[in-house]
Image (cartoon, rainbow, N blue to C red; front, side):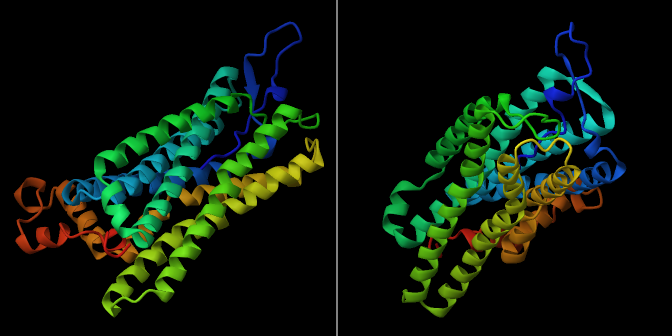
Length: 340
């Protein structure tokens, strides 16, 4: 998810006669703790997300279900977020490039960060809407939802996300803001908070409430109700975790807008660091939700691991077990059209 880069145009170490080409890292983010934290998060989260992507791609190909494509797109956006924000935005700048980085590099990474964030959150919104339509309007869902259409929608979301990230090239972080936020900066920060937090969270709340009411008053058999209950639990967990993990960062940004210049307020810088670190956890938790809810996903992930292991039979190929393949072909419990 989007994090503020620890660099600012106001911190450049250049003379008045020189053009602004290099930018200095804020002293508030120096230290070994952030580097260790983001290194561990990247080292653990990236392999987990790659495993999730491979498993979901196999399930999408086998079952031809649209929901798998939304989950695959969500996982892909998490991978992009980890590479662009954790690696390029923090590890590369803080630990590898040390203090100075090119001015253009900083703002280009800003665009990519916001694009990855917009793609991630709005793919989650699409997944929530997909589950809402599947449960509340099943007949319409069967006509409208199919893989080809879903892939086009996902491509449109990623393209739109990249386009909407371009204005944030002029995003001004709070690390070295010696002056109060400008009008442009205020507009960008308000747009960011609404598009990345308030609007999506409102959609999550509305759709999840309708789904719960539908399940509460719907007349379904107990087995079906249990399957749907697991599905809704997973969906609510994904959206609730996002809401909780991103709340501190949103609060810090809005607090900065109303406080004006906070260049000398170390407490706000520390709070923003902690909020960013908490928000980044959102890129690693979905794998565990899928494993907890779905036996089929666990089996498919195990199949991927065994297929990559040199200790498997047949030079890395999983054992030919008809029963296992048959179970893997079953729709993932959290994604059944009938359930949702």
